[in-house]
Amino acid sequence: MRRAREFGFQPVTSEPDISAIVARKERVVSALRSSIAGLFQVHGIHLAEGRGQLAGGGKIQVERKGQLRLVEADKIVISTGSRPARLPVFPQHPRVFLPDDLLDITYVPRHLLVVGGGAVGVEMATIFRELGSQVTLLEALESLLPTEDVEMVEHLKKILKRHKMKVICGVQVAQINEETEQFRIRLTDGTELTPDTILVAVGRLFNTQDLGLEKLGVALDQEHIAVDEHMLTSVPGLYAAGDVTGHWLLAHVAFAEGICAAEHALGLGSKMDYRVVPRCTFTLPEYAAVGISEAEAKMNHLIKVARFPFKSLGMGLAMGEPEGLVKIIVHAQNNQILGAHIIGPHAADLAAEIALAMRAGLPSRAIMETIHSHPTLSEAILEVAQALHGRAIHIPPDGVV
Image (cartoon, rainbow, N blue to C red):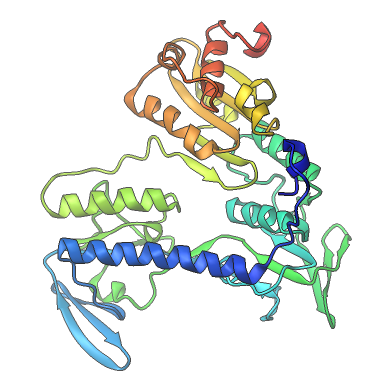
């Protein structure tokens, strides 16, 4: 709406109504929950609501509103998830939020300090910058999204700065003082900040407490539940899936783990395979990746790398999204795809094509030889595949390194 004139329309009012935004979020969540409840009914699944604790022998004790009931099952899957971690330097305060709490905020902050430059921190920083907040993003390590490709993270960082977001890496909060309408914060490099709102997004803790794991002898590995390739714990008949297993803390990975656990529990012999896991940070534009970074690839392989910018993509220009970039890393000898990184609109959707190719063991040539619709964003994937084989059409021939 703010860019209406760019697309040939008269400017329109675009002031955010945070209460309406949160209300819409609640309607969407409610609809999703209702849909799942309906699926439970269709499939004959009984939902026992309450606090559960493993009692051994295939029994779960469920407490709700002071009432206890016993649920029995031959096989059990633990999927209790995770919760946001806190930092002791930050006080308990109505304007100091954890990520889950921020989803119900009742105001748009004047100046939001986001502590933590991982996926959640960068996402929330982007959202509130778009809503009009002044945003400072603070990461203790030397880079945002520290596990991702360095070149692509730097590209994303430049986009965030162009959107007038302040990004500070390699420093921590040294001191915090509460004032009437703001906080006065001193960083370890001496910088002072005065945000009125703080988001602490520094990772997640596993929900393994008070489940009765110790009594049953369930093995833990650094606070998460240890499982084998079938999602089976150290106790026969007891499985675990999702964040609580400490693998990829991603919803779609949890779905796959839950399916694997259920299938194996029913005797299908399913195994979990983490070789190809697409991931996305829902910034504006999105950052999606699958496979490994260029630096990781170089450690073990001879590689080729090609890139294609959205500024050379017809659909990118038509959408007014020229800042995107696609990068694919392949083995220099067999052209097997080792990793791909995408910055741009619908990057998470675009990554699926590459994930499928990697999963099926298809070389980059298979993408190059597949006709892609025009004009579409997916043509950016095609263009990189063409560049990897010296057949780039819409970029100079030196696009491969």
